[in-house]
Amino acid sequence: MLSNNRVELTLIEKRYLSSRSIELTYQGENPIRFIPGQFFSIEFTYQGGAKARSYSVANADQPSADNRVLTFVITLVPDGAASEYFRAAELGSTVGINGPFGNLILPKTSPKRLVFIATGAGVTPFRSMLAELRSRISDDPELEVVVIQGVRNRDELLYADEFLELTQLTDNAKFLACYSREDADSLSSNELSGYVSDVYEDLNANPDKDMVYLCGHPDMIDQAVSYFDQQGFKPANLKREKYQFSLL
Image (cartoon, rainbow, N blue to C red; front, side, top):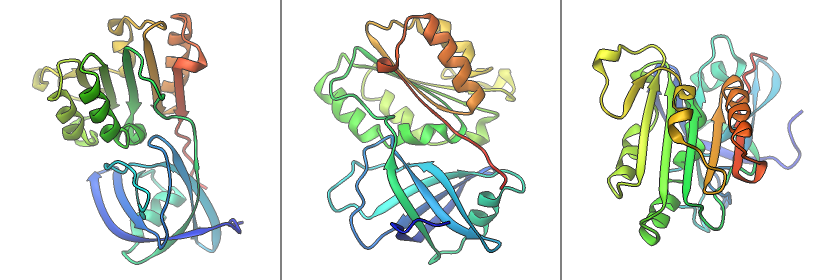
């Protein structure tokens, strides 16, 4: 059933980012506090039943004390209850939220290098960190930032322009798109044909200087955690969040 602590939000903007993802922007009457990287549980009613799904905040701007807007990205799953609900959602419709939750957040003090690895909409919490990352790069030009996003093809790439803008601030910022179904002959220097796992060894990850963030498909998370565990990473410098998919 829906929570008694339900905070109501109204849908004010909706746009397709790709054929499989929708960006939804909601607004509340009162300020909504969160730390970039966190997620909310969204509660809605579908076919007479109460449903809840968790989505990371995708806001592009630095959170402010009077922020009343939250942006989420919904990955469309065929016949999924949430997918069908949000696909049909009209401007002015309302949902409830609980949160924020999660510890996929930036450390107070930056390590030598921050590595962000995502598949699909798992990149959205990293988008919410961009404003803070720009500020940290400005304060510390030696800070290294690597963002790796894995999708099936270029059409499904999310917020690539914004991550590429980060690379314009410093030579120490890198963005790489990994495509599992894109023609290798058409790729640019920041793209490759394959999976995010194909890049792990090239990172030369060092638990003494790096912090790694993982968000996306459960299989990717499990594989990545296994790899970085073997490199000596611990929970303190290996943060992860799985995206669970449900049709019910």
